[in-house]
Length: 161
Image 1 (cartoon, rainbow, N blue to C red):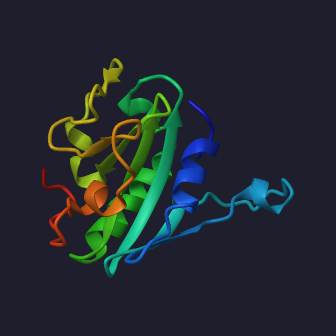
Image 2 (image 1 turned 60 degrees about the vertical axis):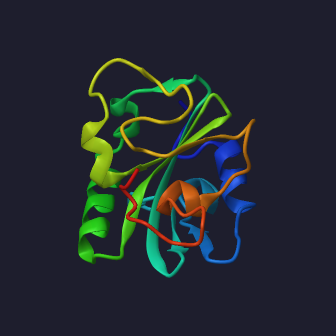
């Protein structure tokens, strides 16, 4: 697994700004010439999707599976996303996870406890316990569907299947 955010996933996110979806990357120490900022970033991106405040942590693995322990490698990120998600009913927080350079999955913090705690989980078609995923080789990247479940213009709960 790469560092905080993989370059492939970062590129997908930064090329995906569309109507109703906007994210701003939170700079890390590497963005400032490697200077130590003596702080940990709460997450990789903050923005909005269809008017809902969104906090997103990007994770990438070149393998086709990822474990819960890799997602939670930096506990301060999970803690921040839980606080963000619980701050207001319309706040959305979670992890965008790219595995095998083709399966992009959205894991809301509210659903993370359902993810297996040990052993790699093979994503297959990206579907796992109602968590939405997209096979980027078979369908276009659609953040509104991935995060909100919105394919027909009506937003749903971020944890709904």
